[in-house]
Length: 369
Ligand SMILES: Cc1ncc(COP(=O)(O)O)c(C=O)c1O
Image 1 (cartoon, rainbow, N blue to C red):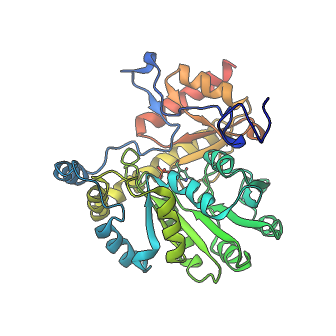
Image 2: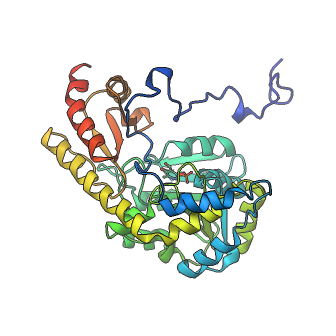
């Protein structure tokens, strides 16, 4: 007997028989090898020395539970972003917040809307809430298509998800597209914009979604992270800026009180202070992104116009096979994560040496398939 009312599994239907894939796993044969790690959109450089100092100083307090409201950091962010402190909350990486945002807004069976081509982790988020997920095709060039997304909003829609810049394309929404989303998403729908790559977008002259959403009448949330431009992926700290304290409190309830590490706040305060180091990360990233883009063009490909620390490109061979062939040659890249994006790969920027390894290995890897 295995029906909904009396299942053999103790799990809710949407959690049964879920596969698990660990993207950070290093197999034994790669341990100690020089690998160009260009698959996870990480910063190739260690955190600023000032951050490491701040972590060492804060480490002696690790016997205590952290204050998950990060009061000092919240003051700094509230001032910089011109948002009331009570509307800022935190997650163990912004990944945690993505799921929490869906959990607080969409009940099983209610509708959530997103572009089709987005970061593959979102499919896990949609599974968790067991919502009726409607995905709207991206434009031919891979960009998020705002008009059909708005047109798909229905009476049962609770959450609309957008990303700028988007992963895996690296492309961003224009100011005009953000205004349209902000103004046309109905007031009973939570508009969620993931800005994990915000600092890269601004460095490339792009729009600031938060500035636009602040003028929205209906509810909204913007998420950002310290994992990318601040070189702190291993620290796990992301934040949400919400249109109301009620939304922030709902997120605090779901993420729980002790979801952050005790050194995170001190580390991030030091990172925000060291603007010289962040600028170094952003400008070296732009240099390597241009080198990869130009190198791909010389090889005859048409890379997507990325503003981030990764580049999407159609290499004309099945992406999973390309990833495997590259990995055998010690260069890690990623697929787009969707079968429909068949021959597109995503390559993260790394050091200059990583760029050389990627560009010199790709033709050989493709020829081997
Ligand atoms: C679009 C997007 N959002 C959120 C994240 C999550 O970042 P973190 O959990 O490290 O803050 C990532 C990570 O790659 C991402 O690509």
